[in-house]
Image (tube, rainbow, N blue to C red; front, side, top):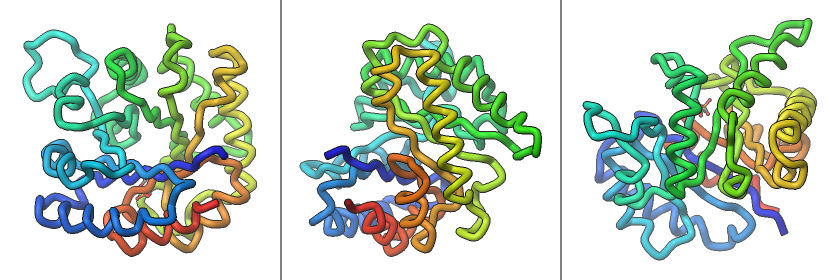
Length: 253
Ligand code: PGA
């Protein structure tokens, strides 16, 4: 049975160590009976060491919200893949639109992705258009983001790659403003096609495609069942245990 993925992107919603610990304890209790769902949490960097302890021995995976594409030491403020692995991270989100808005571009996203995947981390690559035009130009945006990020991608690492489709117009809103399941279905088919044009068909087929953008308890079930995706990248609704656990339940097979 293929598992589904629910990735919590805490952004700067949960910031206090005590709050993170409390959340972790409750999440561990929610995990009982959730064998068909992979639960990954991406807290702010500084909470990684604390959560590494809190999640020890559980199936919950810990990751970061971004990673440096730089290799050498002299880069003030940067965090490398090796540093992340030292504090328990096994995956990283790259190319999130909120990072791109702060200056990351296709080139730096590619550099981060390559550093992370070569170091042994799983990578959740975010792509998404700013707006949906009638003529379908947004498909070109997605194609360009995939091609540039995966240029020269070593196929042997494909089992550690995931793609999150996150249209910018749907991020940080409410369930009513999330994507329609039919549009999601169409878009994930397009993404799969592009992946198959970059990587060997078999490898491309195995890459989980997630959706992110105002996933809440009220729309999770419909979108997982009718949207054709393998799971979700959840922002605001991942920061409270009640809404996050409801989303997890909705994704149970
Ligand atoms: P949201 O964020 O669920 O708050 O829309 C998703 C994301 O940006 O990853």
